Image (cartoon, rainbow, N blue to C red; front, side, top):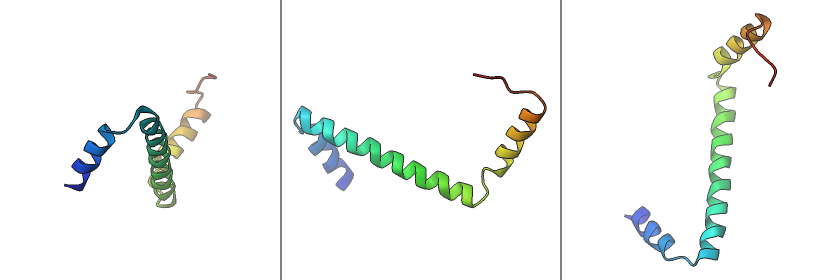
Length: 65
């Protein structure tokens, strides 16, 4: 129920306050994603992708952007 109360209160925010909140929320979400990504790296969850990327590069399957 708390989430729905938050949503209703967010809907009532003045535009300037809503803008501040949305900027904060975006930064918060990015921090969470960064933490998850770092955890995945430490656990080796991205090792196969990295190895494939290196193979593709060595095989000339990459192009300059």
